[in-house]
Image 1 (cartoon, rainbow, N blue to C red):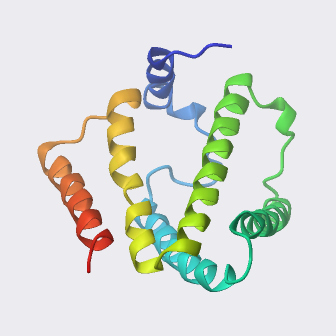
Image 2 (cartoon, rainbow, N blue to C red):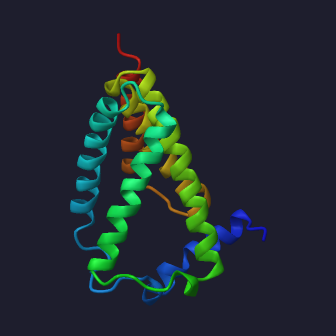
Length: 170
């Protein structure tokens, strides 16, 4: 199945026009997003530190596999224990395609990240990895139709500048 950029853009606005199509049992869609994003940043920072210590004398690809196995076990237990399990075969083809693409991108990101951590300082690798913030904004602009305002673009530019300053410090 071929999916064009215009189809991605068109489909991305379904949620805006039809909020009921969002899977959101028991959660307020926009409430507390900042809390969860901040917690993600905390755990991402811990990931860098724990990974840097954990990959000493271990192949980075094997380390990524072990990390992935832990995630599968923990998330399976979490989804099951919170009653969020549902039949994945009932998901739409589009959902499967994009979740698969997301999984492949995540795996590639983790492989690259662990390899970089094994070769470089965590304090240099992590900021470069966070260049993803800038890329997400650009990709969201191009593919999802999101339109940051001037203030937001300035913040994105500052993040990019900060990455350069941190990654290439002496």
